[in-house]
Image (tube, rainbow, N blue to C red):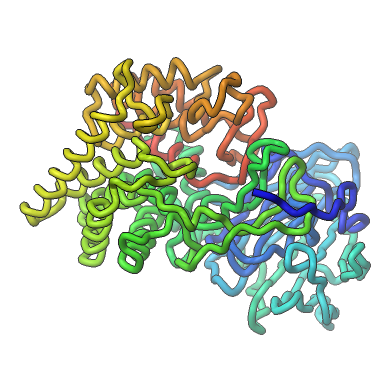
Length: 598
């Protein structure tokens, strides 16, 4: 696809002089999220990414991809950084030790409960030891940095208010701030604070589409947020890697909106490969990813499971056999991809929208059936859910012979993974079907699909191959047995597992498939989803040691905040692609639950 040449703004920081810094490596970012939007927090207390009012809307903070807008709380003195999440939440604590002996923390969160039209950003600066000296800078710029604030004024109570386009804001705790200008001529507010040991200072930023700008007192807002996370996150007692599993659950619920849709990732345009032309917008809800999250949470329950069923069921009842692979979190259409006039994250392009919404991805119908079957097993599939399952099964019956884009969204083909996933879904949902005639018809269709695929897509070595015309092995083919399309002891299952480990793994990490003749790791990074699939495959075979080895190795591919991206550059130990990637956290959660059971 041809691309227009972007204006070169390399070396230009739209907020130079107001405390907002250049992009960091991805492992250094933490996430704040409330289900409707998310914020990436850098090691200097810098908010470099946030869209408002919802995930797929334009950004107010976009320095991550070379835009404008930011909000930072940064020690004045030389310091070293750390940070951690409060257990079972997305309440983050940035922590700095300065060369003057001070220990400073900034506790930060998007407040709960959340609303699609209003956000409450809480920041509490805490002087743990010594005198804390911090610089605070706030610059709100809409439309990825193009729209400066207007009508900015300071009230008698010391709060600041104004507008950014249609968005209204109010900032409390910045009484001593002074206005300045960023390079685009917009207003910025900056101040320095000095806190004695044992004291704290609250900052509260309200963003709203209406004149609803009066927040609760900070203590009340923090208490409500703590209670909100306590209600969302299950205890997961007795589970393997309990802290990481609860964190994965927190990430998944943090990415899930009140409409039930879960974004694939918070960000857009973080490149999978530097200058590789592979920068995508993941701020949308993929049906497949949502099903993965729901299936991971099936044995745990809670909102992640129920929201997945609700969202996928609604889309199927509305669209049936024309189901799109991806929607906005409120079930709306995803726009086509277009390029922004921004430099992008170093090595990538700045894009919004995603062409995947035009694709046919057959496996999404099978994944939906697997999700509905899990709900039926727990007696949590109502009449509408059963009608959605019938719609998915009918879509498979009508369309299974059509070439599709598959799990990796490539050129249409008769992908083996897609067909076997649909067979697995039909088998699973038939077990919960009270209509014996319909159950028999679905099982017969599953048998027919499996037999046809086996006749044309089994490699001469006995393993599954990607498609009748593509003999390569693919890690996604492990799902055939994991999800129940064929038996775990089927010779094709065992041969595929051996081939994936032999041909697609190195140094404890797994890759999707070989796109060309280059060594593993050169064409693309290790795919963390595939590493977790190997853990599930070995657990299914009863090999607990190998299952644990793959699980433990792949869950280390993160930074201090424990966030996982889609790919991992093993050589450089760097995260690649949009952050955090929901389906990777979903498979981590499923592996943790499986490890408990073996």
